[in-house]
Length: 166
Length: 145
Image 1 (cartoon, rainbow over the protein chains, first blue to last red):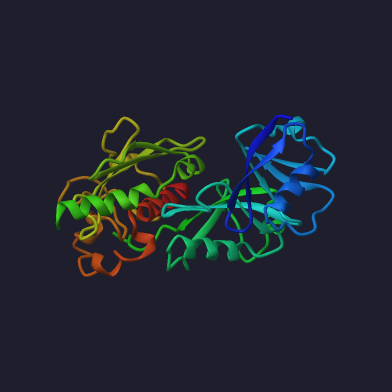
Image 2 (spheres, helix red, strand yellow):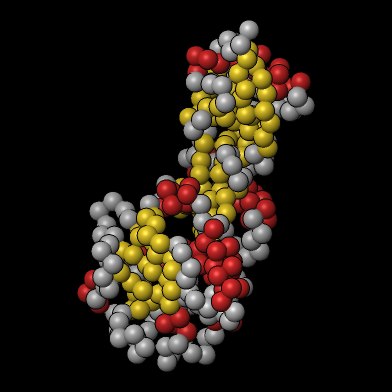
């Protein structure tokens, strides 16, 4: 049986692990392989959120990987139950450095922003603003309350600051 | 300022600006070779503006900021973004005889007669005043213009 190498991204820091799965494997088989590698995903919902490449997909355990874009050498992200994929982008770096973090969707957005800031060595972001697709979001609210679902890239940076008045 | 050190600090700062960020913000990269960081701001229904930093003494001194159109010509007062507060100042700066960015983080601001007491030293270590941070502030002002 031919096997595919797949790079799995998981966890709140976008941790990465490579696994081998049969070419015609199901989602359930992949999850079993992942669990055997020591990756703890916890109890998952019936519809499991994946990123296959850049595309977010809800898949069930019986789905076949090859029918949903899983390819040899490909990268996928797996979200824990009630999680969202989050990338924080700043001019001082991106967190996680590759791919997305799997973050509880009902946690305030600011939690992941503060986490990312710490990881990127940023110490003073108190006046910064978070935007998604050009729209400022409320970082004290969670992701669904900001209209954000499945996958989001947050643009985080300072507002126009001091000076002016000639 | 030691040029080699300025070059390394410049490269470190600019190297952290990812391709993802350029895509997210519709920024167009014209140049990021020391000491120049030249980025175009683009957006639907907006005229592109280019911000060119010249930072040979980074970060002992803030970048000199040039305001250009998409073709690389200096903007005149009437061509400046409107409604963005007074950051894009149409008055002629005495050192350049051109409109200038009147915001902390711009060499023209810190050397302007009204602001010489607001020294760069107070800003240079803040995360909002990295080269990318200053560029972000100008982009934010442009978006609101």
